[in-house]
Length: 297
Length: 234
Image (tube, rainbow over all chains, first blue to last red; front, side, top):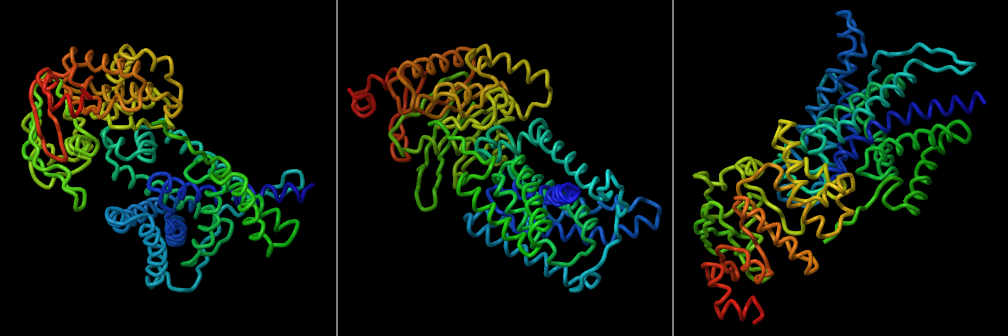
């Protein structure tokens, strides 16, 4: 029983991180129908930002986790710059395929640029471990990091959902994702809305980076690649373009991985992730919560 | 109110509008009739900035609309009801209407305009919580029209409002257009249903493959043999 609860908690924690990343994928896909392959690398940017700023914060007596604030700012700026300098010009003249290739290219550009910075370099770095204490509830050991990860993710997801449903800019995002021409006719600045979406998505990746390095304290330039793939699978599984879908997909993949690690073999966990993906897509090609609302003519 | 001079628009290599000129006076209902592909929708898209002309000018109240960003044109008092409605299918009716008032920041003004639109279209009020994608074609046309009225525009461009609607609904939509016209709103109407369009309009232009072939009072055009043969099926 304890093993079962432990597996579930680990899965929930891992899944929360995937969900935060998947939200970024799904928001960008929702608005410009682009699978932003560079999104995973925003986590790496956040990871290094945290690696450098946590010691500075702690030296001046500020709690280390507050380093997430500059990390969010750095990630949001990088995300917006990628959109502004790479995707927007390509979108103007190219098609979906050229945009996709640009996204893959941007992923490599970010990884290589990071490596070229002398303070980063090719070798992995070990950041300060945050939230390392654990508490025990009925024989189950739960780390502070786990509680914080799950709680913070839940709050962020709820806030994000509320934001997109109720706020002015959130409603503008939904309009742009549905119909850019009609959105323009409403007076919405489409490019402005797209860049804000990139900023928010990349900012969420910074939070995910904080949660991730609390769990696996290691940062390296390609750390976003695998994480990004899992989150991408999570977004597709849940129904790409759907925010609740991204959360559901993220949690599901976290729990499946954790279950495979606990009960079968850690080397088999990826197999199960993709097996679930294939089965779900065979039954529901648009993902679990993905839907196609037909337009009447 | 709106003056278009010598407008040339290209789609890649296709010369879609070949130097058209037209004017819409204050409070007028002007229609633009013509066959498929004549350039009617292109004209409206260029006016509202979704397309840019290669030459020519579109002047409204002394401002050249070609020189301002497309999303600021609605703030100048020009609203556009696009062809095929283009309602936000995954939003509710009321959300759609509120998006029509996106540029208005005062919540009280928005609520007032919302009530005004609901009084024009009681059916929309009944369906306010329904997703726009689940409405019938006629209801979607009402929603698209209501959405365009949410800013209290002085001029409305309407693109094929009767497209795909049953004869009964076409009558209903044209009654609404006349009502808006009577309330003082300037309207530029694009229609394939030339008979109905000419019946409600003050003046009209006939567009043929990117050029204006005829213009004049709507009643005169409706009586013209060439127009009757080509567009009224007489």
